[in-house]
Amino acid sequence: MPRWETYDDFMYEYMTLAHDICKRCIITDPIAIGNFAFDLWNHAKEFASRSHTTLLFDCVYIVGNATGNKVSIPLLQSISSDLLDGRRIKAMASYEKTDKWFLTPKGKQAIMEILSGDEDLFNDVASAWIDGKTVNMSGEQSDYWCEPCGVRSISGQERLDLINETTKPILMCPGCKKWEWDERSV
Image 1 (tube, rainbow, N blue to C red):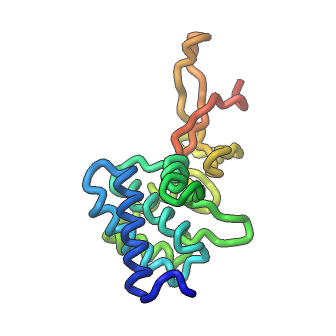
Image 2: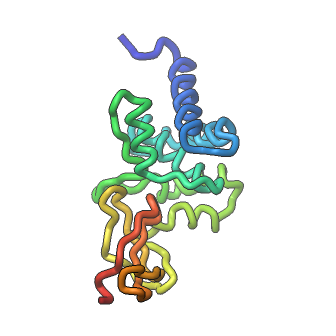
C-alpha cells in the first residue's frame, strides 16, 4: 500500500515538512523561506540523486543561508531527529563517487533561479564544496575536514589565545562555524 493516496498528498507532506524545518531554524519569515526551499526541492527532485527527505534538508540549508539565516548542518541534524522520530539527516553530504547535485549544471541553474540569478550569493552558499576547495583569505586550501559536517575547513583567520596571550591562526568550518587552532603553523 503506497504511503500517499495522491501526488497532491505527497507534495503536501513535503511542503509541510519544509515549513516545520524552517519554523525551527529560521527567525524571520520561516514560511516564506520554507516556500522557497520547497520550490527548490520540487525542481531538484527531478534530477538530484538524493532521497526526497534528505534533498529537502539540503534545500533548507541552501535557501536559509542564502537569505542570511545561519543554518548549520548540525542544527539540521538535530531538527531532523526531532521531526523524523530520531532519524538524523545530514544535509549537504555526498560521497566521493557521486556528484554533489547542487554543483551540477542543473543544480546550479535551479538554485540560481531561486536566488534571482545572484551568482555571488550562490558562490557564498556553495563555497565550501566548489571544486572540492574552500575559498579563504589566504588563498590556501585546507586539508582539514570538520568531523560533524564533512566540510573542508577554512584557514586564514586569527584569534586571540587567551591562555597564552598570543594571536594564533584558526581553521573554521563554513558549515557549522566550529573552529579550532590551526596546529600546522605552530
